[in-house]
Image (cartoon, rainbow, N blue to C red; front, side):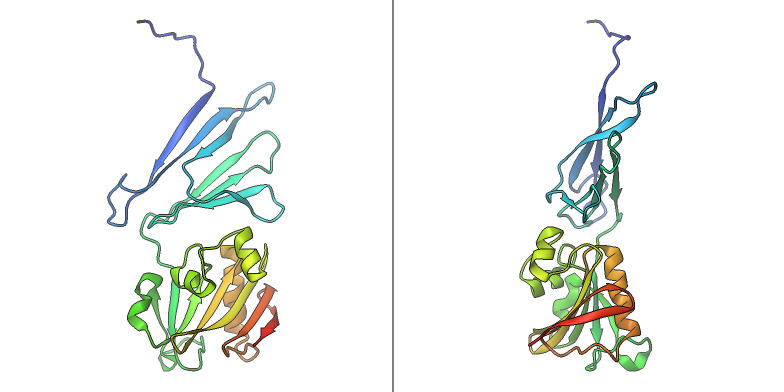
Length: 232
């Protein structure tokens, strides 16, 4: 046969292979990104024309033209497909490189979050929470990455599904207290990771304002303000 040296490909597949939970390179889930060239003149520019192998449907993050998905794997790689530019789409994979452990904290009876040994707070992985049955929990992060949060909410929700279930949309967070085996589990979760960070900051700095009794639920939009919306 002959090799056509004048041929110019118009697309390329960039293949990603995760590690598995035992850190075996290439032993985890696989997804790929299709790279192409846009119609920009005089010089064409690279663009991401397609993403394949994602294990959650891409959902828009608010009204941003940026779409997010996750891999349902031990690493929980986050996929961001940015379509905000009309002719040049970009892609970002947030790859943890090791098994993801979502935040769960074993708290003192008061559910206080101040630092110091007197509060009795320790951090554990969500996958280890069963070892601490009968303890009060502070659960950090949404149900898409945290198995304890998924148990509290009744499902693995993210994006629009998380908003429909909790009333928490883009830019917002919730702080809600649930009964878990006769103890309290305080869920602190935002629509995105940045929103979860705001929730944690609000809770830490406003412990005197947050009622952690079972059935209480707060929704906020900033690290300085949240509103009680449910009191059962």
